[in-house]
Length: 178
Image (cartoon, rainbow, N blue to C red; front, side, top):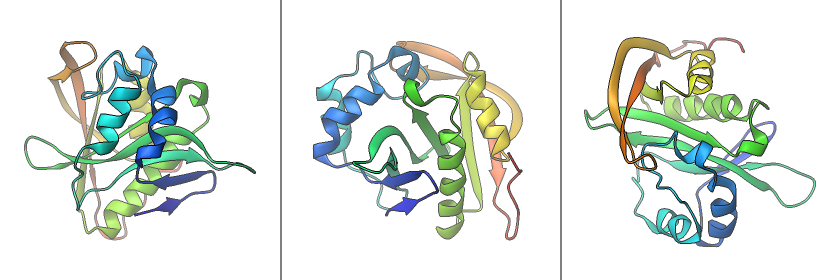
């Protein structure tokens, strides 16, 4: 599955993306806020991620900033199953592109994809020491559940408090304006 927004191309990751992926995500400030990414993160980790089997129903994407030339890999986003069987939305953006609204733009597109897939509810979470991610989720229309639970961070090698959110995708429901 592929998708385009005003500034982004969302597409599956391919083996030849490994060097660009490793370069974009190899920043402890990014990886420490992801549950499953290890630290340090290099070319071998990027290759392993791209080679790993993917859920055929729940797409994941690399995010490319559209340019006049070659698109630039600036992040990743997608869906995954939660341990409870729900569907979780997740994303990351390379540090050089923080503060430009790319997470919000990608998130809006993912919500439209979720609706197309017939999903009726999304879950998300952020580590409590990453409040910027919580602000993105709230702008996307996610609501805090009031629960904070421990979640393992592979990069940190420990459990970290994670604030949980949900988004009901009722027919005709509109997202909050940014």
